Image 1 (cartoon, helix red, strand yellow):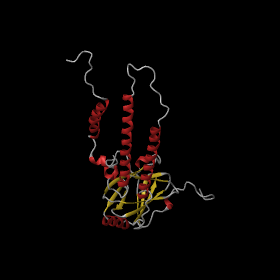
Image 2 (cartoon, one colour):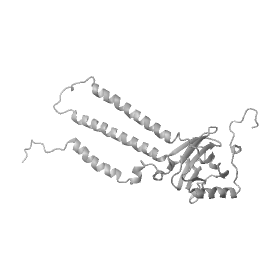
Image 3 (cartoon, one colour):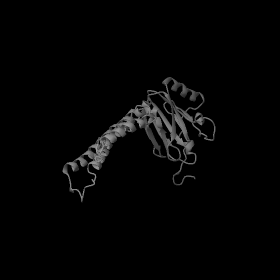
Image 4 (tube, one colour):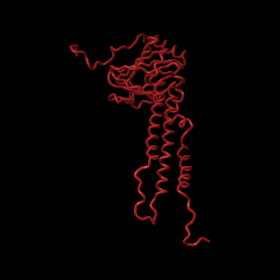
Length: 290
């Protein structure tokens, strides 16, 4: 029998932390699907959606893995220092003070520099594959943003679609009345972005890319849509009273279906392009009529 003054068996802080982690981590991850974890909690439909999404996802997941490893090391060292160097009951005065430690100073200097350089070069590589992609487009499509809808000029096919504002007034399934941007699958696309009035932003969450659209500063987005399906798009820049109703859909279809669609626009008489005559000129030239 243990004597009254003998302390019972105690678990170390490391064991307690290990047990707590073994319980909490599976509990936290149990509500996540494999697809969510694989895509880093980006939209699940983004997986393989374009030739850019995998690069974005790999950079995102790799960054989080690196940061979690560093975080676990730092948290572990903090907890170890708290336990190993805690003040005991019989301690008196201050512990031995150290002015500096050269190995620790070198570690704390070199490690952040290596991490920053690693992230920098990884970002540069991803940007070269995505944002800096200037692959000539087999299909050139102009997306014109306006308060509060979208126009689509299919320049290669010389037809257009003029969109109208989505009415979020309680009507069932308002997304069915949203403008639809058709994209052919497995085709190099050049999407030219143009704002007719105020600053807008072209955003298809599943494509993991967003571009601001500033009047007078057109830009292009080059990509390949690699998976057929329907995606949701929206304006991601506050552009006025009905910003929330500036929605659109994206349909990635086969090349044959894309040709049938553009031909249907031509049959409806939507030939030619919707040009700058539909822009709102905020800054007329000096001497021009107001």
